[in-house]
Image (cartoon, rainbow, N blue to C red; front, side, top):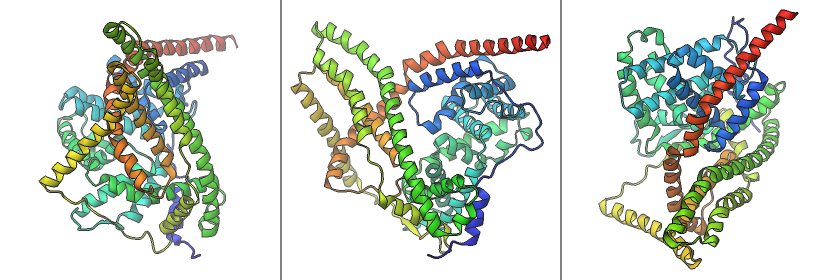
Length: 523
């Protein structure tokens, strides 16, 4: 097998283990009392159970939550930043007694940028939410060094920027490269819109990262960020975005696997990259390890989804179904009630159990992707075909057929429930759960495909399944987003429990520090 290109090897060696060290920082590390941390970790486990999110987004979600609460309680940027860092450490999103006090000063600057624009009040509520999101993404990048990830993504982007093209060249070169850049971030680190949005925002408006130049006269920046938001949203929701993501994904998976190999073998990195055969053997080992990790991740995801559904959905449904049936029918239909209670967790358990892990074909594609990224010939050129534009009649017919899929899918379910003697109240709650759980199951399966580099195989059964399931999945996504906005448990935790609980933890930590001082005086 031909040896890899030396420049590619050197670039990966420079990327691996790269860190943005805070040089010259001799400040004391930020320390949180162990008892406070145990309480905070327990609270976070309960809190995340009622607000289902992907694991890699939990810390950023916590940053958003803490920012909202602290800004509402305290308008001083330094106080907000200090409390943010300490709460993240207490909840073990950050290491204890490792980060310097100077990190609070850096975080203060980021928080102050948001507060300054918030106080100007330019833009609607959605704009303020967007600003808070990119502020949280900036803080997340600040508290956890991303230098190595940035270099890997840069390596991936440089290998693909001239290799992925559009068949009819209808997309200008700037936007084509931009979509490849976004796809690299989404596929390599599973970045969400806020994380990618922050990177795009600082590219569209570089002065955002130099607040000393504008923070005393911020009105121009406030107007600029309104324009930037429009540009970012247009880029993130481009009609070809998903196609670029699907093309980039196989090479992103290969590079992630190569990164894991190098991280697991710090003393043999150059040896492994200098031998394609050795790299292939190591990739097989890593692939096997990732399969085991994926199984564990699916189990955790299934359990979290079941808890989330039980706490936030089933209890609410019981509070609605029983009173409604007593009021309308003067009796409770226990058979339907039992099915509605047991169906969501049983379905989630079955889906989690039936998810299949990738096989040898996938490992071979990962090895091929690594070869293409590292050899002298580079990645083969790939062209994206733009979907054919349909005329008015074609749009009408496909729209009509698509509408019929909803009638067929949900109509069939209603007919089945009627045969089981469901009331319309019980049937509506069953449909609600069916849609929500199906969408969660779909996301769980998508998470299981995190390291699958080969396209999904089609067929008549897959086509039929998609035909019947897509209406239910889309309804589930809409319900999941809509219901999460009115999640009474999230409101209860964030506004009734979290604020006083965190105040209690602050007092506990201050008290422990006071006792330590008194104890030191005795020595």
